[in-house]
Image (cartoon, rainbow, N blue to C red):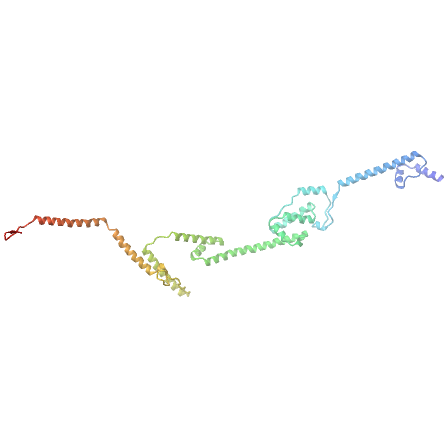
Length: 353
């Protein structure tokens, strides 16, 4: 009894603020058989527990409002190998709402490199992971840039560094190919024009040389123009007289003979004429140069001249011919009149004659 009373006396002498942690930690100390003191201690303990619970709920609500989004500690997320600072989630949403990632369509290596650097910095600003960055890249590319991305190997599309290096290599290779194709195209035009000169006729060849086309299409247009002019000349020929026609044939024959002699002197092979004449069936000339046709033309020309002369007889000559006929009739009539006018009567044997 003495020991319990001493313990209770010592506990009762302490202050109230020192009694609270002892009560929560070690439970309620032994007290006197006083009902009023027991109820006060129970109420105090209940109040402390309620306050602790309220404090815990307030702490949880504050943690939810100020919660942060932390990127996993992976060095591949940052090209510099440094870990990013934690960014508030609301800030990330606001950045992604404001930032618009650009599209890329050109196929120049320098511009592609600049665009990839800009895209990388923007994705770092809006806190894209590497997977999201690679997935969004294919959507941003267009035209030649998209075709180059599609033809890249799948191994180069797994990481950002390999993708950036492969993309720049593809652009440099594509540029060298385009340069080679451009040079080949220039030489191809020259080769095609020279081949066209070799196969066309002399008139077209002269027109191509004089005009000097730069492309094969221009050379073909020149040939078509010369051909159409030649056809129009054939459809509308000039009418020539017989003397001009024969003179032209003689000149063509003389020119042909001179050309054959020049070719023989220069050592060229003479091309044998295999065409035959339609009129005389002889080989060596055509119907237009045949001598029989020339004879017929000359004879026809002479006959035509005689008929023209007969047709062109003046009307005065015809009238003179009729005058001559009428004149003869008048002479006969006058002779008869004169014959009747001068009569001589002769008597022979008493008969009148």
